[in-house]
Picture 1 (cartoon, rainbow, N blue to C red):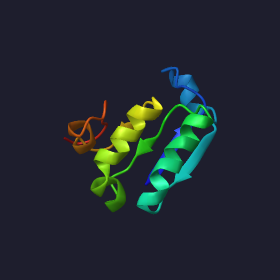
Picture 2 (cartoon, one colour):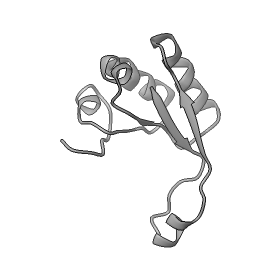
Picture 3 (cartoon, helix red, strand yellow):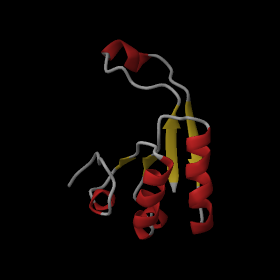
Length: 94
């Protein structure tokens, strides 16, 4: 799982898109690392992960969406499948 989490909330203004925003990559390469990755995002009070559609994320989307809800962090998924598993929002082709 590659989770990209920013510590700055986007404001929606075009001018803000040109400034540099700190981004932190939180990686989980194995199932056993998923919980720790989401705990890191939650503990650092980052804005939340952008969860990809790699094999790990696709296979364990129910676990990821359950943990995202348990840690109460917002997440964006790039597929509708995690939303069907309980996620709140996806951004990408349906």
